[in-house]
Length: 427
Image 1 (cartoon, rainbow, N blue to C red):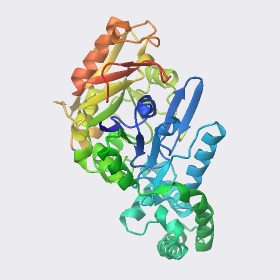
Image 2 (spheres, rainbow, N blue to C red):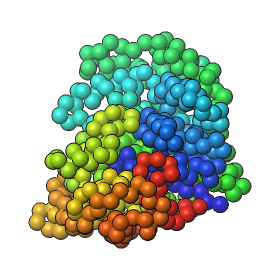
Image 3 (spheres, rainbow, N blue to C red):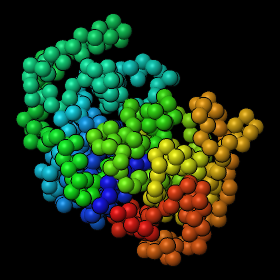
């Protein structure tokens, strides 16, 4: 039985939650391996819509064990609030497992995030202000606080004091802000310890044993390939690795354990926050995509920037992730256009470039080279098979598959769980 990675192949918001949930009935474990509550998934089950920010999408499947891996950063208040919200709606959350190695987002991380972003002014990155970047920075600087530290008050206090020794100097002397109290941080963190402890486990051991036993384990990335801190449009990226390699480090499994890597592709392109975006539309087409596609951030509420499909990015995602399959989402949003542009290459300084430029400067100046595919006007939300789609919609899917470098194994034709055409099994 396979271990699969499922990740975003663009800038995030591609519909990973729906794809994960679609597999949930066949999957034993769903694992978030990076990011924090700066990512969000919307999952529609029947008439119910669920917005998940930190929890793995598998929490909505009763036979699935959801796991928050050590590569995730956890805001305990956000997590417990999200759990309580699901429980009020009748969702059983008792099977959740949290790695003791996951790092905690503290009140001082969110304070530093918001203040430093404002301080950057026009040079701001476009963070969500939720403390994600500062928490990962502390992790790398080896002054972070992990979930397991909640259960040793002496160690916890030492770590909070060490972190605030420096941060309070920065807040007071650079930003002219009031120092943060060690006691106040301790009180807030310890308030959550008792409620979190039942969920904490050695998730690396559990997941490796599950794979040994032939269980199906799905590793779920947040954000998307182009937001990867190493392989994305740096510095306009997240602070972790949503790419497939991040699943291994963030969950604690070796690369030889992974059988399939599934990339989620929207039938057009969106991104949230600052940074280059070659196919971005600042006209009525862009506004129509935003309106019809409901392109507003699940976690942030911010309008998503919208543009046509970018095959250069799709090929890049195939390469850096080793994608074996694509799940194409939101094809129905394109219904009604007479013709649909697809970016097949870039023009940079008068030359054609078919692959992702390694230089950020080149990417910033890239202009899309479009091919135009005929559109369709028929509604496709009721389609159950590929043959149910209009001929032009089938041709569009085929063209994107050929341009992107991996087979499209499923197509989303509407927001609902059942509104999906499955061409090939992922399992």
